[in-house]
Length: 242
Image (cartoon, rainbow, N blue to C red; front, side):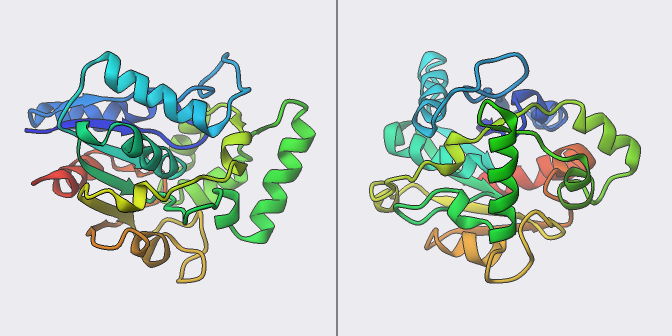
């Protein structure tokens, strides 16, 4: 059995994993779903990437978790890479779940198309507090394209404004790329958040940056934790096993 630490992506908090965790626990695994600093409703959004990373490091250390399988979804791919640098001795395997894998010196913003960069820049500027609110149309068509309208509205209500600073901070990842920790890339094939294909897509562009990695694929959208949590849990088990 494994100890999974599931780290959510942008606009989410740890509650996004609730249905996935229920299934993983039924299968006998221990599961934890921390909320990244600056994420969730009613919290201080004035955080940078280092503070986001430190909040997950602190959570793992405070709970004295060891031999963990650390999963990062989307934005959290950038988080788990930096967490791995800080506490590599506590991590058995990393799972990047439709997640950003940045080159050394890049930001997440560097890895999205120019029209998406402009959209996020404008939303952050208009917010007055350097956050980005997810447009429902984008959520419906690009993020959760495998769900009906009712589920799209239900899940959208759980989102909160995303701090923009962590998405534009450029990361030193030299140490990450020297770590011997085994890695998996879990890829949902209908994910439409990044344009499909090699120029911008999750796989193979992001995944291949990991070097040697285990590829696990399943049908589904970027937010399959809502549309098919049982199927996702089963694939997480495959991606995380020894």
